[in-house]
Amino acid sequence: MFCGATKWRLDLVGIKVMPICYVKPVVDESVRQLCRRPYPNHLKGCPNYGKRPTCPPQAPMLSEVFDLTKPVLAVWQPYNLALHREKMREKHPNWSRRQLDCCLYWQGKMNKRLRQEVKYNLTRYRLFENNKNLTETYAPEAMGANVTETMKNADVILEWPPVNIVIKVAFVGVGFGGAKSVDMSKAELRVAIASKQAEKEDAVLILAAVTGVPKDKIVDFLKTGEIDDLSYQILVSLA
Image (tube, rainbow, N blue to C red; front, side, top):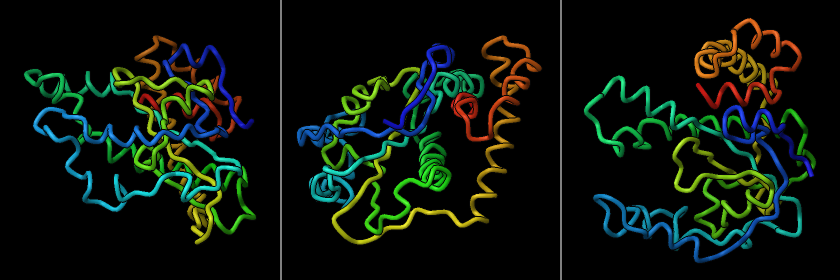
């Protein structure tokens, strides 16, 4: 199984940091009912339920789109909610916890990074490159996948509800038809690598401040790996 992390890195930031892993999706149609769970100012649950084609009940079940007899790849993107909360508290000391954690201030950035991770890793590791029916979903829960249990079986623990680390998960696999390309051009790949390098340099300062590890030691450690190694995932999760 293509999956990796190291114990000390897991302890360092509270997440498993290798962002790709083959999984066996746990499919449970009742998961879709979570969208109808009441939350503040939305007594009937998510306002998109029953309105968007990508949301329940219109969204198809995972088994109707993905050939689950073939490998399914989970790609995930961590976001340090605890650090975000503290940054927001400095700007808005009178805000409530719910306001500080509001996903409107971080979800868009996180979704963008997840899509970049999918493209980058599929291109970098040449995964599914000869399959014409490649398909993906960035909302596997809407398709009846119990993402928490699926990732738990792959030794990736998701906080639910998230308190410190939010992990957004996408599934990539073989569909029953209708090719969907997620490959990057060479130019796009060069831009992605350059972007990662810039994020990495900025995040060294954050990691040093959070962990107390001297900046020069962090820089020396990062020199031992490539730009797409596990170290990058640690740093970006804190950015």
